[in-house]
Length: 312
Ligand SMILES: [Fe+2]
Image 1 (cartoon, helix red, strand yellow):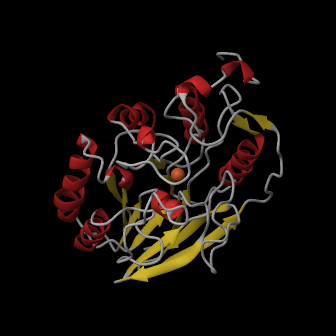
Image 2 (cartoon, rainbow, N blue to C red):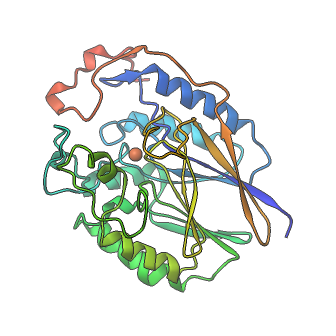
């Protein structure tokens, strides 16, 4: 087969000047990345690994803009949500940061709001010699119908699909931080909160990994951490932690972590998939903006701050 290529982007979360909060840096960085991916014309498709919006859980207008921009690209794309689009992985206790984590548990309504814009998930399809699959792993442990569906898809549907030479999965959260058998990170401990926030808890973690093995998965792409790390190979499966686009995070988490903003291009042959990291041509240093960070309550959102009050 002739060599061919695909892209993977994630964690763009530009936000909107119509929102109760806005950070110009995030928008600048997404627009830089968007110009770069618009200029790449020799790829067959692009995977979008979640966090397309900053507050998609609240604002259709953020989804609408993201869809318009992605639809205008010269190649097809396939997207899964992230926690900024929907909401976070479930917990039954609040964490050490003072953030009200239980209030931020993802709901069925939030997950379903993604679908009219970017299509249903999980999904899986074959392009040439690669099977591509996408799902939102953070529904594990939620008890939502979406979790039941995810397990059925992972354990019954995916293994039964025809195999291709390679199988590439995108899932937003990382399956683990350091090792597959690391313990569950403790949300109530300040020095473990971030690792809890980024990763999938056991026993869901191991269950997902077993499903990957049953389906011949070769590459797993995750975002969410906004810090790139050399791929980690576990039982033949390469786990990529991908760079962010909006802003860097977790630069201090690993000795080999690299917070440079950007995205991956993958070049595919019969035997290999070779990554090339493409850094943003410029990282915005803007500190313009308004409104609170984090995950503020409804009564803390002041839309009169919005720079753009037009409905379009
Ligand atoms: Fe995220």
